[in-house]
Image (cartoon, rainbow, N blue to C red; front, side, top):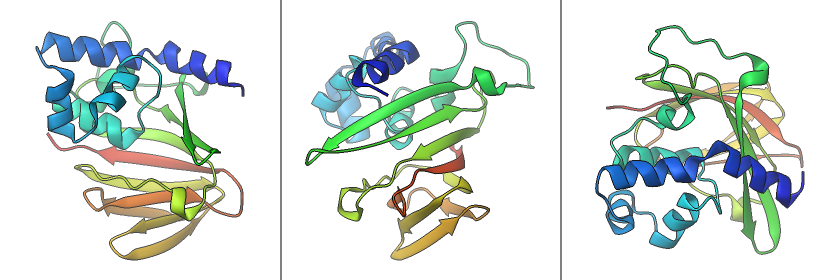
Length: 200
């Protein structure tokens, strides 16, 4: 996939415009969001201008600062108020992210599995994590709890002074307030079912 394809994926999701519109509707500045999330103003500006796509943990912080649920960013234009949501495989909303660190390209993709449902407390995703060097593995932390089930490949979880290797069929449940990092192992991508619970 080329940089042009990735840029098209980012813009098609329209996350930046959604975040900006929600922020302006609440009368908040970038500085306000920065203060509430701990994220830098330049990063927030890049996100709003679709230069970069936030990982799930960052999107969770932004959504909380805006008084929204993360699922609001993935819903259809017309909200679906039914309490049953079906998402066909071809209907998953895909996002891509590319990080540039020391000229090494690492990235991941995540697909929302329940975006039509409004006002939900759990957010299920299929996450594809590329292998990365331990020193370049970002650490995340956010309110809530998280469940991971490895579908394909082998990955490493680091958190709470523990290093845990998970293989296909293994699962992990943890308090996501714990600083944590995930990376693929053995030079291969890992596919994971991730369910994130976000408190009110």
